[in-house]
Image (cartoon, rainbow over all chains, first blue to last red; front, top):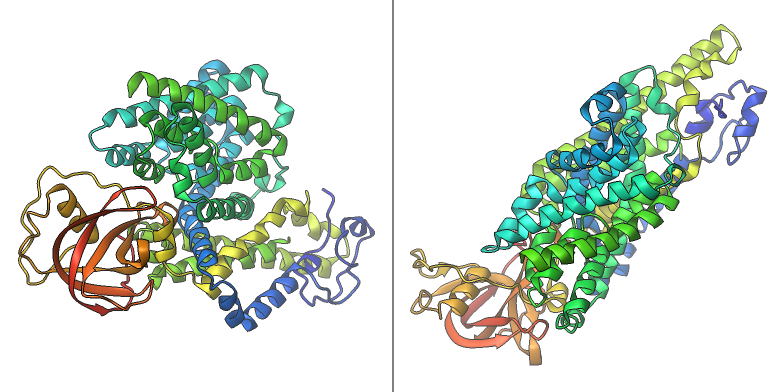
Length: 352
Length: 251
């Protein structure tokens, strides 16, 4: 590995000038040379930033006193607070998969043939009781552990939509319409499996760019576990912040009265709610209640809302781009979006 | 971003989440049921931060010990595994996690209020199969949801003749009138939708967003929400007082 830099440089603490090996120099791009006894690293930057913000605190509250901005901040924070447990537990589970579950387990647990592994992994999504924020790092870990990407992607798409918590929420949100939950579960599973098979046919391995993670092969399992947790929280969490900011913006900016005018045309209403699902980025455990409240829209268009939401939305696209690479996300997300609309409409037409 | 900086950010975030849970401010953002999970997530974040500190210090000590022995760089053996060598861009996005932590610590965004209530249409109510008599009490406390449902679907049968007490915040209605509202949450504030009840009777001079407790009686008046044309029940106000925001602002 390139960096044989000493930690002192990383820490940026006023370290005793460490003995510098010549090999260390090329690695120290951004930082000044380590011969300096003290340097301004990210940690110092953070400290200065925090002190400045503390000093400016009262002014900061004045800046966000406008009602729209205040609502934005509330929704931004609440999306993150809501997602935080799912992110953290998802990250911990993915670290367990990446570090403690041996590779051979997946070879035994899933069918050998990739075409069969895809539906198996999709159905396995039933056991992950969470929402979509947790499943992105988990799918990344699965691929890293040798699970065929197609199967991991089927799991990624199915898990947030077909687990018991989400389906129960859907039943509660649509009293008297139990077929809504049935249609949601089956349509989501079908989309997930189809996307997995589609990946088998036309997907290219080079589209998925998992970051190099040598820390996962650490000799100490626990050290590797915590390193994986730290990395994924910072990484997936950072992209989650981007998504939450986008979702909060949409939430504050789109006037609801404007949506009303779209509800009358059946085709337009399906597309409008599909787009809304992407933009709002609501957690899959809550989206059924939002769908229920959009009562002017047809049941089919609301089903499409429920199928698209857990599979494609702003925060997911952002997280997928971070975990799997941009080339992947910018192909996968639009394809899934179209598949979810078509299959959602089909199931809606037949069942509802 | 180096590992220690990451650890500081995680610790800050974890501490913020724990603080929000312990002080109940998290109720401004999500439902109470998420509390225990939120606390666990905060603790796990803090633990990951502390573990990072611990491994960092141990690595540094090992290196110093190694350097004391000889000037060979085998002390760096632990160093090449840090996972940030592959590019600072990979974790640079992690800086963004400061935003929610700082927003909660410094701005502490308030619960949704009249601004959101005005933007979204009143929540769609569904008729219950039957409306049992209200519990005893004079006045009897009724939630906005219950009141609206009984007023609209049961033509107020179970409300007539009772003194009622409702709690909510003031939101401006159509034509300068006032409405009492509460935000209904299913998961987090992003899915919050208002339930609105129109006010007639005694005129009130409370500003928008003020929390009030009103006493009143059933009114047959019914209006429509300008945002989504949903039906809105009205209540005839007999008396009112301003109150502090409840600990659980949502229903």
